[in-house]
Figure 1 (cartoon, one colour):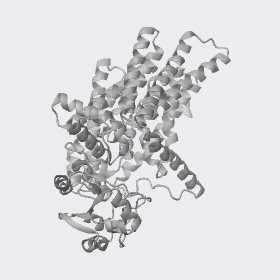
Figure 2 (tube, rainbow, N blue to C red; figure 1 turned 180 degrees about the vertical axis):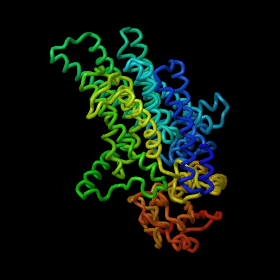
Figure 3 (cartoon, rainbow, N blue to C red; figure 1 turned 45 degrees about the vertical axis):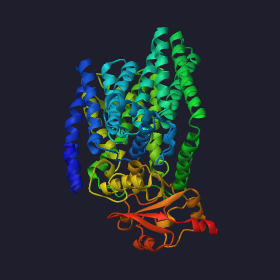
Figure 4 (tube, one colour; figure 1 turned 90 degrees about the horizontal axis):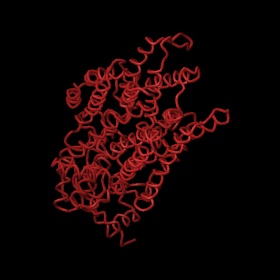
Length: 600
């Protein structure tokens, strides 16, 4: 059914049709598995098989979306990195699409290793690694929930809720570094909970050693996962320490076990910080400069929006073809989680449940989900907010599992008497709302569905014509520096190995097509001295308004509009450009800017 929905989308069927078919397939696969995980009488073995099935079901949509090659922006970058590592036999290859990838070789290294052992193609080897770790990550949440809440059912419910987070079905199943690292992140937390609670010193030391190995794998794979691991561990360690101090102040006896738990979490945090510091200092110093603008810019934009009564922010689901009912579920997912969190607070307040301090720490970490929601409205903060959900949802999953498994048999008053039967209904509603709402709120239509050609998307702007041209350029010119629009650039870099320009206000390479004037002498000098010798023009940029609103990034001077065709046609008469290759939609020009550069 999911594959059929993709076929309908590719044929240009109505959105309401292919969305309905997609959800029939997802419901058929996911809901029976979720029901099995939530049931009281499911055996531990059956819960394990159900978690395995849930991992497979949530992996299927992305596998069917593009099984034969990259389509997402990050996939192009990582596939190119893996190709270069395989070709050279050396890690740390420069990456033109996401430059920071060069300093985190875990994904490319693992992919090449799987390929060499299995004989699979490089792309298939990468997908196999992602799929395997995706399923393993759900088992980590099961272990964590079981350890913290004391029952396999709680662990299974936690795994189910986490498995429906907004990143689970598409974003964290793409071929990219976060898709691998986030699941190692989950295992560090699961093993940390084992180390913190085991009374056996030898087992604790072995578990901490395993944590160190997994941490090293995370640190060399993905910067943001490392950041969230530090935040998660600091939150848990801080909560355990603060809770222990508060109990001591109240005169409650604190045993050696409580002190051991706090010490273990701080030791693990210290191990993670040490490994991360060594890697960043010696191998990946550009990381801090890469990450720092996101949070600062998003905070500034939120403040500006508040002062201007919300103007200047993003319009959620704007230009979306999603059916209205799916949009309602998107809005309902945070509301359902807020309701579940309130019920958890009620259980603790009424002393029905007395969770241990580690569980409190994970709950606090999960509350960062609600902190992230306003940042969705800030253009610079939206991506960071979305990226946080795959991490903080582990805390949300623990909270939800606690509510479902610890609700008292006699019920609890909250305005009305909420009995266990009502809680069962709430659980069913929660799963459906999270499944639909989180998938809908995760990525937009062109990322989720193949669809017909649509200019201005990372996914549906890709064509065989572009791929063949990229390969021809590589064969004819070698690996050269090229100026092009954002969407053509993805395939030129991934399939042809071209080194793409990154236009910015300080390097306005867009002047070559987005204005009707010759490039300024300053730009001509920058292009010439930086060895940019080719311009690739996709005429679709002059025929269609880009779906994403730009052809050259957020600073595109023609933001929200298509490029005037005269700007493109004039290039054939420009003295500084000579057409050397062309297809039906793409023109390749050799740049002759040395004269402008020398004149300056």
